[in-house]
Length: 526
Image (cartoon, rainbow, N blue to C red; front, side, top):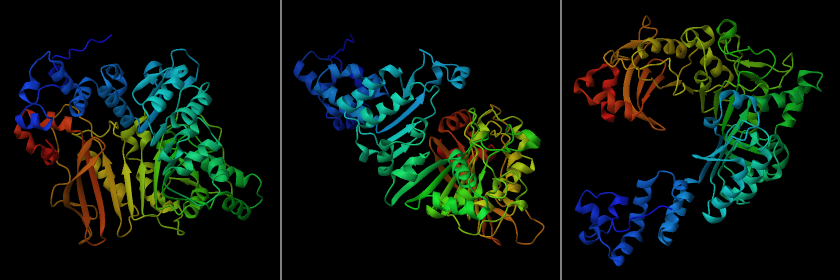
């Protein structure tokens, strides 16, 4: 049993640096001294502000503070309050730290397997009492639920029921984001449908929920579709059709008109559908992410989609989804010469984001691939398939090809990519996360002020560095290097991000580093 030294409160809440801080927390000099006076001790250990500081100093995770509930009612209330705050968002994931990669891929049952609920590892057999504590004792109201891929199948039904019946406990109105339940309940049940209809963000969509359980107009802020969904719709409308016209008619009837959404997130993997390449970077530097084009076009129009995000992912799990493109459906590919891709004219989107997530999944020969026609054609094909004036290309944060000292070598490749088939009044943004290499004395310049880029031979038709501004991204700070073309009114933005920790280390030893290449612009973050 933990022993608490109540006579020395500063051991728990730390030292306060000024008289102003003492007054803020209601601390007099008398309270700051070590004492055995129970009345003084009670004043300290029932002060909610001090209790909160004590808990923060002990652990960043409220579930590791349960022992403090035994001190007194004030501590009990404070711990439970922190648990409620920390579990407004619940992320359930396979604890891959407890099992090797081969186990993760094989799906073999193991007594060593655990599930992570936020940061806590929980054995599957203990999930029911764990969720019951969160709901019944702590009073948790889940606003955001995310279920990630789990390594094994045998406990998914129990996990699904525990989430629905115990953790959420029919409090459907509180759930604003309902993500990933398809991995536990593939086609969707009545309970999943009830929660999904109340949420603002939902997906990957479960077909029964979208096609059958939603019986009145329902609007979502954001929906997530997997390529499996697109292929299933494609299969259903082609297998029993004898003509393209009949297939498209069946497709239009299959897509619900009761659903609308502002944003659509489409996850494309590299192993779904006939005619795909066996691996990214294989077959002459191609990649295999594709989908039946007419299916997504129909969904975008019927669901009144405004913005789209394409997530290009690699997947270690084989699927059995095949689609008969033939003369009925068109294969939407992004690695082909853009001139072969027909331009969509039926709609226009406010913006499209392309997330090259698969680059972080063991992609080989990446540097060579960036120079291939397959890579260079991505943006031009995206603009033709999903027409928009605003497009963003995002590289993963752990993409180790871009380093702080070689970024100047890759900027021209990205500029060439952006210029391909570029129309007037278009904005293109690249999100880059260069990694540190330790070679801090060799930082190049990029996009110098006054420099001109692309098409310099034509008077007035060129890009120049117009502005440098601050940008932020989930734990990263960065600079936006804004290039502008006055003639075409096009913009190309390079958002370059680093962590504050890296920048602090980079600038801490010598102020001369403020003049080191493009990193001098990041001095303001230190």
